[in-house]
Length: 243
Length: 60
Image (cartoon, rainbow over all chains, first blue to last red; front, side, top):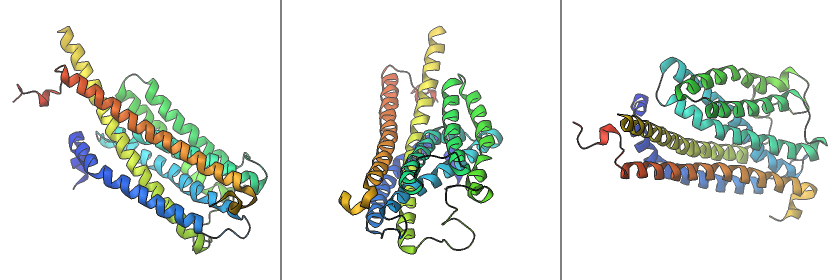
């Protein structure tokens, strides 16, 4: 089905209605498999069992950046192509992206304490991810504070595109500066440096997290479309009452 | 898997999984209750005869 068909919100709602139960079921199955693999994977030779935190921390970190990237594409859709669902997609993704970033920060702190001896340091990687979290909160706040939805959409799109500059900073911070955080061991030039026995459950948890995001995002987009219908109907009601 | 099998830092591992679960359950609850709320409001408006023009029977 061509993407343009989803420009019609009613058609998109029908699509979500059909797909959502299957996506939710796939998410549950993927997490069941991923968690089973994660807890049967061997301990790391240096970090011991704390490596199990990686199965939450790394997918959450990937998702935190992926969601902002998705919002950036949606921002272009709002500003350039004026696709009716672009702003719906961006607005719905922001709280979910913030949640994944929060999980990344919390699990990172809880992993850092036993491994580094501290919950937090202001190194480039940790700080840039914290900035990403603040930017998510900024976009969410913008949607709440701007009274006119189309104005909120434009402002949020501009903020999102400006914030996209942070994505390469996060990714390459461990290469550009001396950080307590380790360099990339999966998404890097050359083969992953992580052992396959740990990589397999990590990738499965990443797939599960991606499915969870897709499920939540489609459901949140459906809610946003319904919220806009409610707003339109209330405006119609108010104008008919005046007439 | 018992906490003793998770080694000396079991508290940190359990706390990580608990925190991730709580955050994700909060997001799921937000999406769930938001859907119920919007659906209820729309149904209420339609019951009062306030519907989209395209759905009105008098429209061509």
